[in-house]
Image (tube, rainbow, N blue to C red):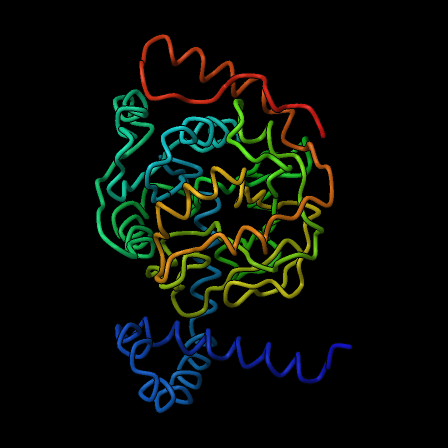
Length: 356
């Protein structure tokens, strides 16, 4: 039986710690306090108090900017930022999917790939759809997202910082992704971003890497309640950077909210709801692909993953083919672009597309 009072105390403590860390990163000493915990403990009450005061003072300014930014024109309605390593077989499917949803610019940070990923997306780079940056080194994910905010915030209405196994899904076919995002942030005047919950897709019992698109091959997922993690689509002019890949460090007075208008602080949504928007997270894929992921390492932290993560997360409880409606058009777009851009193998075949 869950101890409810204890759970709530832990949640509120977590929220306070997240608030304090955001303040400390805004003070530009976040990395120092992360590595030296006694300093964090000393500064914690001052950071919470200062952050609370500044939030109250700045909420009106945030509301004014959000109101203006939802109306004024931008070069791009939605841009997507990603850091990748050795993911050439997946990158074109991912780009074409988000292009269908309305994304017009992609900021791709290449974390020392060895699979010719730059050549795989050379036509997107040449056309200006992709801005490519070579970005080697360990634990570079937050730095990549921060670099995108610093350099491109003025160009786009919304920015999404995502991995290549994360596919945002608007539920209502009558609304575009941009419509959904605008509708949600309008629920609260201080809302500068939308916290979108994961739905975790498993291996669909594939041992080997199957031919075909990811969205065709992996059709079984966990229960909705499994994992409370979120990723964020946000107004980059109200963000100062990233210290956690799930959410930005906002300027004072700005927050993320979920689809129901609840303020979300940190990387978990304790009011998880997936009726309007969600992220299909194809974290494991097949056993073979997950072992390759472990070998690549993690872009945001050390130590790296192990195969134990596969055992913990490989849930195949519910058949969910919500993405199949995009399959034909994505395949056609990939195959049409193949004619003018030879590149490494990209799976577009039909194998593995039937439910188990």
